[in-house]
Image 1 (cartoon, rainbow, N blue to C red):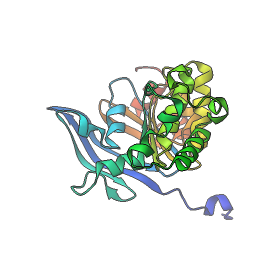
Image 2 (tube, helix red, strand yellow; image 1 turned 45 degrees about the vertical axis):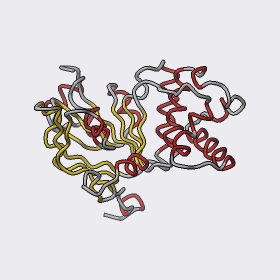
Image 3 (tube, one colour; image 1 turned 90 degrees about the vertical axis):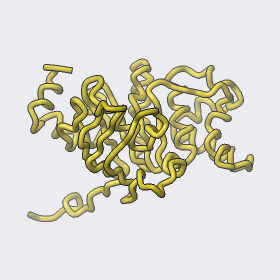
Image 4 (spheres, rainbow, N blue to C red; image 1 turned 180 degrees about the vertical axis):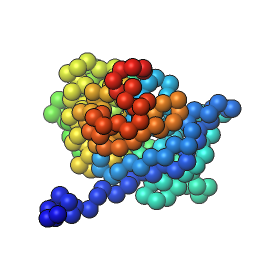
Length: 262
């Protein structure tokens, strides 16, 4: 075979690797022996029926279960090869490197400006010029700057739902993380706002690794590079998105994608 630039290009490296991850809430096992590699600067979608463990797995990727009474995580989750659950791993540093965007927009009752620079402020940044620069960079990165640049001192609660969610994305990227986790970020939005969020996710991969939980298979097909199908706490199948949706190997995957259950 004649080699082309496409065939000789180096594959994307793995940014996060989960190995034999088990997650418990008390005696209930929510995630069973999960193994998944999430590649750098690509979008990995987690799909599956409600209650299958998608969000539980996502929250383990930045140690959010540390805050849940009775929850425990076993196994390894490696960020650039380092186990984020190792005894010497600092959860604050991990959450600086891995940002989170939740299902519903959750703006603070503050100005747009104060929302966006909140993270850098609590990490000690006091220089007004630097905070101004962070605010503009983050809002541009979230494709919101042109819409709000003349009203940064107005309440973030005055924004539309879609604008609020993009502002929450700006708030996440203001800390300049390496990974952005998104838990159904468009499920509470109308179709136009959803389209803007999907376009934005594509742009974010120029700099960030994105892992997204979505209940919409159409959305996963549109925006993701890789897809992992969860069912009853297990990762049933994972692969390039186009393969998962057109040539699934597992019958449970095929049944879910074709609407036989879920």
